[in-house]
Each structure stands twice: as structure tokens, then as C-alpha cells.
Amino acid sequence: MAKHKNSWTEDKIARYYEEGRGSGELSNYKPWLTIQNVPSSGRVHRIKGWKTSRIHHLLSDLEQSYFYLLEWADNVIDIREQYPLNREITVNIAASKQISHPIDPSTQTPIVMTTDFIITIRKNEKITYIARTIKPSEKLEDPRIRDKFEIERAYWQKRQVDWGIVTEKDILKEAVENIGWMHSSYQLSASSERDLVSELSIFLQKSKDSILLSLRDFDKSYSLEDGTALSLFKYLLARKSIIFDVKKKFSLSQLPADLIIINPNSNEKRAVK
Image (cartoon, rainbow, N blue to C red):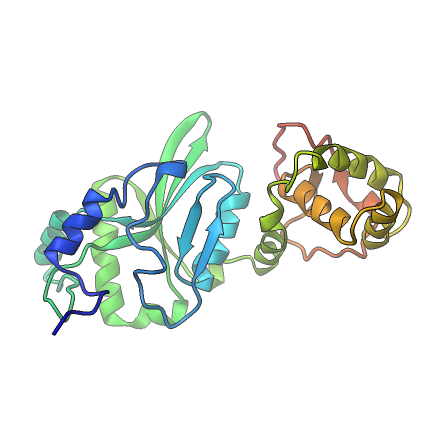
């Protein structure tokens, strides 16, 4: 009988390495696992990254939430998800700690363990890396999961890389909702919209109405399809040409005067406090 397509064999692992999985950076990185490779009991997501300009494969809502926070952080310059660990090293760590290394139950092949996110950070002109594993807090009491995490922790400790676990308790819900709302608007759909973005910035600074009414008025004033100004507004938010507290729930009922609007063509980065 043919093995399930998601089963691991030595040939399959070798093929993944040959395909370059787990290698590269930014737009050239290939995750070890994609949403097609992993059966999931929850939701999975394919999202084009702001920082990498490639499709990221996120295997849960919690991974997506953390990914949004990484996208917003100015000091993060690369995000690599489903990053493979050297199997020889993890097998040796497991043996030394008398922990059973994860295997494929159908083939008995030791699997390649992965870390959910390897994050490249620029701090004071210095490049550093951190490793983060994502897991709901209720799962942390499972002894088998804790054993796997101990292998992972020891692996990154040997490499002097900061490793940690992120749960839903570490996620800023309002920030995630705000970033998710604007995330797909990071790129303009047409080059002709760049002039409209500048016009909208000026329009908002002069308006005395709520943001929502101002956006509707802008569409009418420029004979645009309904919703065009809202898309442009989300672009300004995503590009941080409009500064606001991302940790507080955003409302279109606010007044434009409550926002800080800067030149949308500026490369200046502002910290959100």
C-alpha cells in the first residue's frame, strides 16, 4: 500500500533539501513546510509579506497573529517561517537528554524538526537573530510537547540564538486586528494611485469631518469608485505615513486631526509608542 503523501521518508527529506527548502533569505527563502505539506485541524494562511515580498506559509491563526506583529516592527528585517533544524544535531540532543526524537509513525523515519520563526533583527546597526516557537498556552502542559521544546531550546542554545515560546497571552489583540485590517493594502494597485495618495493626505489634514465621512467625500470629489479612498487610507497606515497607536482599536469615526499625517513619499520610520 502506498504511504500517505504527508509521510516522511529519507528520500523525501533528501528531495526537500535538493529543492532548497529551509535555505535563502528574504524573497529567496523557501520554508521547510508549506500549508500543502501539513495536515491542520485549524486554519492556515498564505500571506504576502511586507518585508520579504514573498508568500509566507502560516500554519495557524496564532502564527498569523505573531507574523503581523513582526511585520509592523521596524527593527525586524527578515522573517523565515517553518525553519528546519539540523537533524543529526537534534537526534544527538534527544539521545543525550534521554528524550524520544520525533519520528514519522508510519515509516519510523526521524523527522526534521522545525522552528516556527527565525527572525532577523537590526539593533544599533548590528544584525542578530532570534528564534520563536508558537503554541497555545494550554498545550504547554503536554509532556511530549515539552520534551520536543527542550530539544529545540538546547539546539538554539548551542548556537547562542535567543529562543522563546510565544502563546496567545503574548499577542496584542488590538494591534493584530489593526495590522490585519490594513495588511493587504501595503502595495498600491496602480502607479497612478501615488498622486491620489498625496492628495488624500492633504485632504485629510484639511477635513473637519470624521475619517469615514472624509474618505467618502474624497471619493466623490475625485469621481472615484466607492471604497477607493479607504484603500488608499489603509496604504497610508500600512506605510506609517499616518501615525497612530497600533495597540489601541482603530476607528474610522475618529477625526483626522487625531492622527499624525506625514509625507507618504518619505522613507522616515517612526516608532509607535
